[in-house]
Length: 100
Image 1 (cartoon, rainbow, N blue to C red):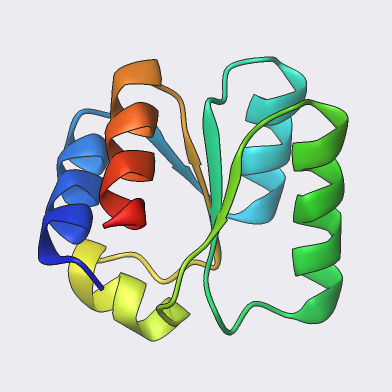
Image 2: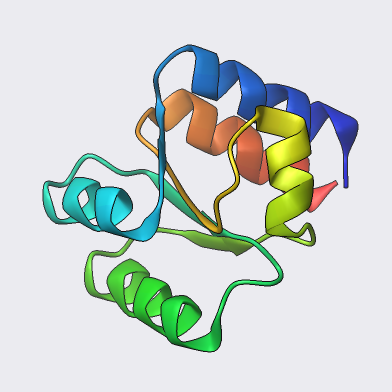
């Protein structure tokens, strides 16, 4: 995984523009405040399917990250499998970095 991606993700979290956990993310998505959804590689199939459904229904980009929940915990201090970015600038930057 690109170290700049994880660094930008941490910055996004410190800025308060990152939501964690499926229920919190679902509330943010249905409220129209999400610009990017991300899932961990080891997310349960059921949660991955529900997250993909949300992304499709609300036309939110979805990234499947090549990192586990434990690796996300190491990078950000929170163990989670579903993340939502609530800032358009951070979302665009993270999508650019993921493509590298």
